[in-house]
Image 1 (spheres, rainbow, N blue to C red):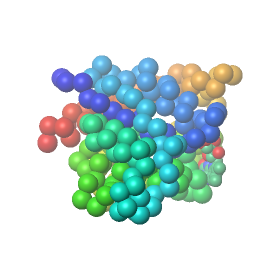
Image 2: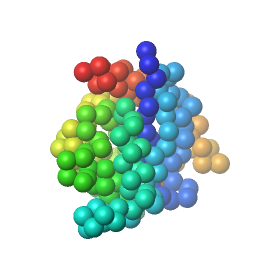
Image 3: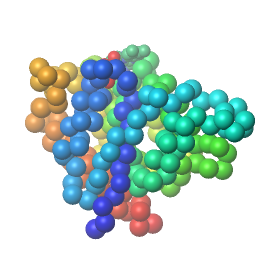
Image 4: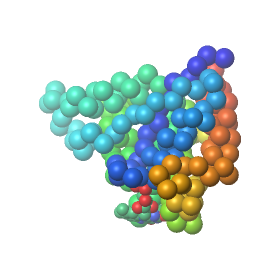
Length: 187
Ligand code: FNR
């Protein structure tokens, strides 16, 4: 089975982000056929169509769009902001979707892991993120779903995700995602 290139997109820019801790843990849990790499979104200027229309596309937008196009799939690790997704994620989605007719996300495999220090596991963000993915023709893994609730309890004093149970869930998720990306790539 060929190695699949998977982008990890973290929806928090916070220094001690729980989402980043979950994303860091993923890199050591991936099955052999998945090559995971971080796709950074914190340097993307807010979407404004004028940049493209005026031939003044920010270099970071071009870098980001090219990175997405090269991938077989991607996994969003997102917090929930006010029962929805953070602006940085929506901004990245919109930038990747344009210019019109050049949707970098098209036809790729997608996954979502939502993370919260609260008990609902970012359910609202998890499902809001699925809505633009339908429109952008991203083939989302349906099951298993991944909601990491009470995340602080899974971290050690250095902020690393060490709870065996959570690591086990993430490993299972990546196994399922690996099968899914193979299926999507073959279709
Ligand atoms: C939050 N937080 C939050 N948590 C949640 O479970 N549901 C929510 O709707 C919200 N809403 C929300 C709005 C805003 C503007 C902020 C800043 C925060 C709390 C959030 O889960 C918490 O700050 C996490 O620590 C954010 O993830 P990172 O930065 O640790 O990855």
